[in-house]
Amino acid sequence: MTLAVFTKRNIKLFFKDKGMFFTSLVTPAILLVLYATFLGNVYRDNFVASMPDGIEVSSDVIDGIVAGQLMSSILAVSCVTVAFCTNLLMVQDKARGAVRDLAVTPANPAVLSAGYVCASLVSTLIICFVSTGICLGYVRFMGWFMAPRDVLMLFAAVFVLAFFGIALSSVVNFFLSTEGQISAVSSIISAGYGFICGGYMPISAFGEGLRKAVSFLPGTYGTSLVREYSLSGVLTEMEGQGVPAEVTDYIRDFLDCAIYFNDKEVPEPAKYAVVLISALALMGIYIALNVIKNRKSA
Image (tube, rainbow, N blue to C red; front, side, top):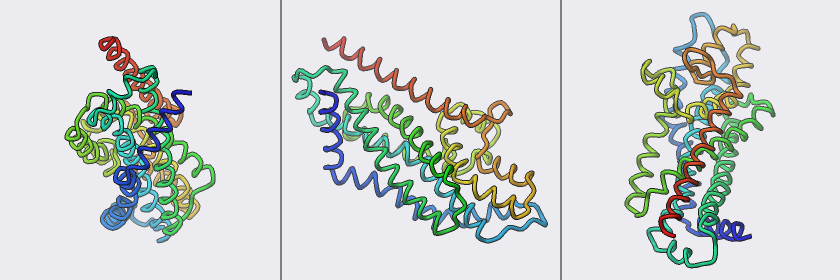
């Protein structure tokens, strides 16, 4: 009961803070506009240039490829960056002294820590699912080839990636205690995560050493899941228009729908396993950190 009350309190505080809420919600929409404006032509040119001579596809398919790549890039990045935004309440309570007030209540410290995680997960999923709907609307406008299963699995991938984002942000935010640290970490995450997870540029375009390095990062596999569901339908349509399977397989590899570890393709269930196990491991670290902290303060 206490967990539910504290979770509800944190959710209300997040949505009551208009600055934090609208920043979290508007960021994916702004990214969609920026990506479509500045990266759309880059993605289009790269796709056309990668097509073998003598193979042509309709403009609708090209639009669908570009839209799916844009959507997957935005969602892959937003699931983690939004999680950091929603989880900042944990740090704000420290910076503003609210933690000291909560500490004198009868509530178990473990419940208070869990309340931050539960509230952040709920808030993140609300924003990420709304963002997914906005992105799907954009794809519908540009060129729709997604099957119902692709849409459902896309939401599943967003859920898993958002859970990973919550686990990661919980561990990182545990060590923060000032508004300045919040700004610094938010800037670093916003600027760096999209690159290392393959959101801004396909991992296949990285050098060999960097490709091997990012293959050890869970976010890489989350991005691949989102790309796979975003582009599966349009790649199937390409084959229906006579494009050889060898070409569509090459495109899957180029756009990170297929991801490799030690030169072996990682199957879909293994991608989920990597992200989920990593998230659970991070949650275990978060719990351990709180246990150690509570013992020291006892």
